Length: 380
Image (cartoon, rainbow, N blue to C red):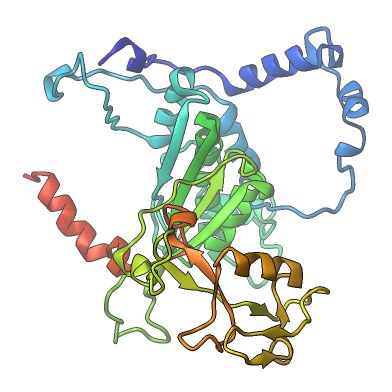
């Protein structure tokens, strides 16, 4: 392991780091070493929402989950060179342990340095899964948090509800982990989180809170199964989701994907244009355009009185004439077709913009994932 990748054995207190930033930016809001709330409110002004009722996400145990963010790690990293390959020179790390503790330990060395994070959390299918965090609540705790029983254990309602307990536990597990993950991201960093229908709605709201709604990038649908499940009661669930958030979506840009042979095949050069292969595009659209109504005389003699009914030419007459002079208009073999602008392959983006629908034949499915893992890792 190189010096650049060596990790500290303990973590910092995130609250102290935040207070240090606040002292640097707004020293006047501190009094006797503490934050003066009134001065801070006056400084922030209208940015503070003081209304008693406002939009937001809450659940039983949220306050305790936030305290888990503030507390330092209680774990310790133990290097294991005897189980490693090229321990002193490798730039790759595998850390085994509770992921919240590990995320806290990573803060000191990797705060603001990570380009991409992928998380595949438990999907909360309603089973009694266990989270090792100190704020994990049992059924009695949940009923008390949610106001269904009093502090003395007396029922407040004849209809007690326990299903929300699973959502609350899941949100309490995810909240501090997402918070810590965001701290690790670079300013041009991005995070991908896999999830299914059970919690995608809660995860979207939770990530809006942690990362900011303005930093949402995409909700990707991944076709995880290649065959429908005939045993399904209502619908065969064939997809999962991948939520994508950037540290700052206004400046983050994804790389382009490689173009496929099928995509390039639609570009041809039937008129031997020196600019190379091209494909025809539609000259009209439904969107209103004030300069998009004019007649066109084709080279073959046909007169087109205007665009099709309910549509408009997408360029002005002046721009159209300019494109025609530059041989950027295709008129058909006899010169009497509806004109079509040429889109040259050499002028389009040299790659594909990522799409939000991922088919299994493009990215694989769950069975392929298992086979790939087995081929890469020798399980005993």
